[in-house]
Amino acid sequence: MRIIPPTTLSLALASLFGLGLACADRGSQTATDGRQEPATAPDPQTAAAQSLATFRQLVNDTNYRELGFESAAEVANATLGEPLRVMFVRLDRLRAYQPGDPDKLLTDLHQINYPVLVNQSTRSSVVVQEENGRWKTATLGNGALARQIAEARKTMPAAGASPPFVLHVGALGLYFSRTAWRIS
Image (cartoon, rainbow, N blue to C red; front, side, top):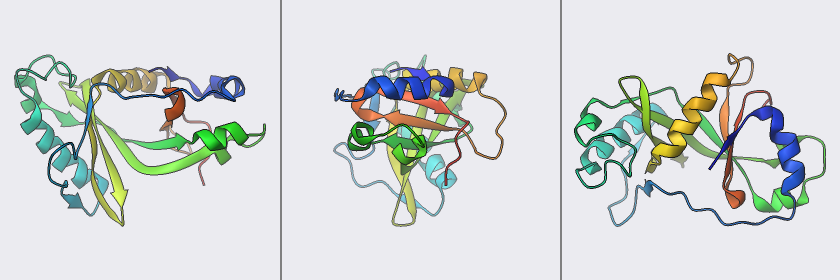
């Protein structure tokens, strides 16, 4: 998966029409894989803190690398970083897109991606999702993507009127960073 700066998004969209590739996130686990339904929280920050506590319990000596950590022990020192909202581009909207307002492609997933940091270094992520006014764990892990997002954030201009977010084009397996468009 790649993160592409916002300046190349329009060019990328033009080349994406008609493509329909499947994408599978590797190195992440959904919160409900064979486990009971995750706890919910009234706000995303509380849900992310609960997710991090669950994450700490799941990381062990056999899966720590897959989940983005350098050792099983370092997860004990993990903290949450600055969150980013996750937006999505549906394949049907991408196929029907006519040049103009790219905001029409966006679907708000009601998800927020929190990087998981160890000593201020991004290791992994937790993603929380809003459902019926409550927030819960959506995914844990995907250290490679979390590190790519962290690198892309270093090149983002300071947030202006529109906060930055991650744009996921799931059918194509692409992620974009975006700061320039306004979301209504």
